[in-house]
Amino acid sequence: MATKVFGIVGDPIDQVRSPMIFNSLFRERVVDAVMVPLHIRPSDFSQSLGALLLIENVAGLIITVPHKVQAASCLSGGLASSRVAVAGAANALRRTVGGWEGDLFDGEGFAKGMEAAGYAIKGKNCAIVGCGGAGSAIALALLDREIAQLSIWDTQRSRSEVLAARIRTLHRTQVEIREPKKGDDIVVNATPLGMAPTDPQPFSVDELQSDVLVAEVIMKPVRTKLLIRAAELGFKTLEGRHMLDHQVEAIWDFFRLPRLGG
Amino acid sequence: MATKVFGIVGDPIDQVRSPMIFNSLFRERVVDAVMVPLHIRPSDFSQSLGALLLIENVAGLIITVPHKVQAASCLSGGLASSRVAVAGAANALRRTVGGWEGDLFDGEGFAKGMEAAGYAIKGKNCAIVGCGGAGSAIALALLDREIAQLSIWDTQRSRSEVLAARIRTLHRTQVEIREPKKGDDIVVNATPLGMAPTDPQPFSVDELQSDVLVAEVIMKPVRTKLLIRAAELGFKTLEGRHMLDHQVEAIWDFFRLPRLGG
Image (cartoon, rainbow over all chains, first blue to last red; front, side, top):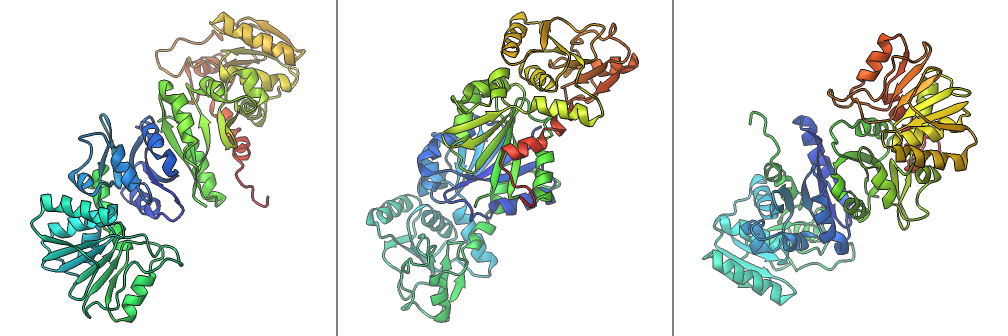
């Protein structure tokens, strides 16, 4: 058997941590595999995805910014998980008969990271800002954990409406379209605002209640301006890296990589 | 800067040693790069080569069996070295403006490996069996070292005639089309015969002169039936691995990888 090759596809690519994490695990678990960064522009993404299927030992891909939505649209019918279908985004693809099969682990990673950090989710009032792939995935994972109510918000009104409509077909929990406000227990930034030092805040945290948890999906910088402001106000905060760290094992299994003793 | 990714492309791929060799060198020389095996079928080769150009941090490819001839034919005009043009084969490609640029290091690797093992080449009578990419490359490298005469042979007569004609435009050394015979000092198997245990011998060594050197291009098995028979007859032998080992530094430079102190 040839060494299995996994790629992480993004643009830019130099910030990604997945090769470090997965290659350490491959060594630790004695798996003949390697993960490499693959720098692909959005205009070349669809063609490259088809061509990577031609390389028979390329077994799986992690998809990162800005390709998650395009990745979902490249999947043939039947090869997208229900999470991909609802969120319209995919962040992991594996080789299967007939092409790439896709799933989306951001939501589960986010929720597991929050639980691992000691925060309860069940029964909480949750607000998500940003209704792209990450926001949609997080909405689904929080709803699966029986939150009390959910609000979603996006500067593109149509994105929040589409997500609200999809959620209502699956869940009975109340979904509102509004910005975060006093009374929210968990408030999530799922926009890219905060990656660049000149970005405006994605929303204001100044009026939130004192025991709120403010959470990020941005990995770099580790402490965004939003988290810094929230901490100044004495709020609890959760960094974006937890979302990635807590989806590694789910992606490992999705890639059909071996478990010790398995 | 993203990690540079290099690939070795072949079918099959599990026998290749280049990732082990290059990844050791990357570690030793502290270069942020990785070499991975890429298993691509001949029918997918040309399309994959185009698509790999779309992955911006894929910086170079080593090409192995059975793709060397097809690799040469995929290179645009002006992007093939003179060695590629004469041999009709390429075994290393690097990214450049306008596409892949190709060269062929098998011949130099073979000749340097022979010299490193202590065998002189200048003034010798040389016979090569197999006029594909490897045989053509070796013919050119031996001619550059002022051998006395060269014979070439291929079961496909037209291949030996094409190679002889190309050689005659470049070198004044006498070239005959014939099988190896008594009087040859260096006899090279440049066919794939000997990779499979059921393969017939590529030629008979039984009538060669007692101080002949019998050399292989096959890497696996390390000791082919041809080398075993030659050793039984008391002849000197040279294994195929020397050809690869002695082209690593030339390919390193071709890939524009940094030299210490450079």
